[in-house]
Amino acid sequence: MISRVEVNEVCVFLARPEHEDGAVWNKLWGAGAVLADMMLLEKDWLEDHRLHCLELGAGVGLGGVSACLAGLQVVASDHVQNAVDLIQQSAELNHIDGRLQAQRFNWNDELPREWKETFELVIGADILYMAMACAPVARTIQKALKIGGLAVIVDPGRSNVEQFESACLELQLDVQTCTIKNLNTPLCTLKRCHIVLVRKDKDSTTVAVKKVLERIQNQIELYQRKSDQLVDEKSLGFCLKE
Ligand SMILES: C[S@@+](CC[C@H](N)C(=O)[O-])C[C@H]1O[C@@H](n2cnc3c(N)ncnc32)[C@H](O)[C@@H]1O
Image (spheres, rainbow, N blue to C red):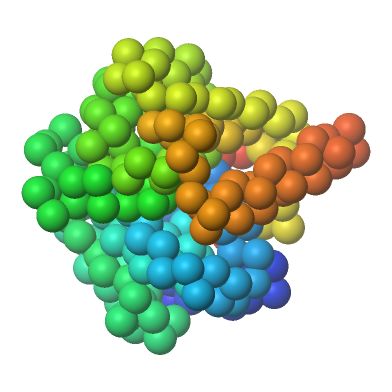
């Protein structure tokens, strides 16, 4: 099965399992839609910068595929092999297989040596739903992120963000969290959303990473400005309506 999702007027095709078996990895999550919305301003807008991006807990890969369509070189990872196989198919569907690599990775495991301090961006959506993920995700970011890079974790208002912030601070990472009420994108509405930005050293942020950060900050401001608007209660929830 193939889902077609529109992100800022760009069509994103996602290979999906034929049968819905209730597993977390094969749904489309609202936080993933927010991540996609922030990364994919328009097609190829970051192409000149050749930024390397690692997605953690990619699921069906809406965030990673969108980042890749924006022009990034992406490794989309998940610990579920089926998810990885489908993301590889999505890369072909979107004609980005030269730029997107799907790889099985469990954040409780040792980081592959070739990933150490390799990525200017580490992204993840709705990956802090279990408290026990906080420390290993923070550790993975610390090891995978280049100095001057940025990690962007979108959480749909679940309860483990503070624990994640503490885990990052213990590793001497810089953390900044924005909380938005009634976050509306054309794809979803989240009653509360945390956007957590993590850096090794704020002062060394590279010019290309600053461009991504600026886009995210502008988008956060826009979400915040719209947060007083009435929301359609029917569209609330952690998953996208399909
Ligand atoms: C709620 S889903 C979010 C999926 C996707 N990021 C999205 O927004 O649509 C959480 C994802 O984290 C993955 N995950 C859970 N534990 C993991 C681990 N230890 N290592 C890597 N991935 C993990 C799951 O397989 C699932 O795809």
